Image (cartoon, rainbow, N blue to C red; front, side):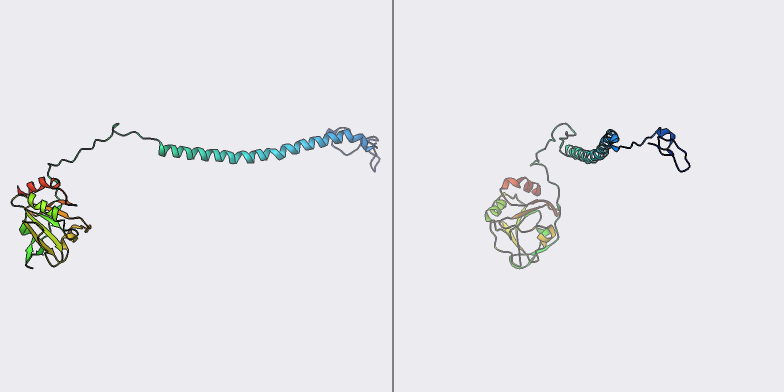
Length: 232
């Protein structure tokens, strides 16, 4: 029930000093009369608490999922761009032309003006023997291949065997001129490393131009046309 203030003002059955928009506020003598209102207030508070507690959780969970999906899409797009088959520019496979065996090969470079050592230990200018087929036999005597080259070479083409060292070594076939290369200048100048079991042949024309290097001396069919051109 209402109680007047110290000056005797205020309603006798309500609370004074409250905002007028609150209306008439009455405090009952028995607090149990407010049980229904208290239960309703607690329900409203619990409902508001659930809303404010779960909404940020959904936001926090949704943002990482969105970032993960975007990252996966970017990764898949990059993989597709790398692995996707690309068409040929011309629309067809490139045509590979076979190497002609009759065309003259491009010149490799000039033969160095070296003086090698002959069978009698006398200096022999290498350019004085041109045109020539010079066979490096320090890694392999290859007597059979050297003999084939000597019989294949036309008249006017000298077949020379070169061994690294101060001695020329014996002639391994008829018509072959053995020479020694004391300083290994020929291999060094041409940057040709010795491969065990392999003889390298150099084809040099009469102007001193190294027209072809045969990295492994084999059958005569590999170089016969080149020897004919050297003699021409």
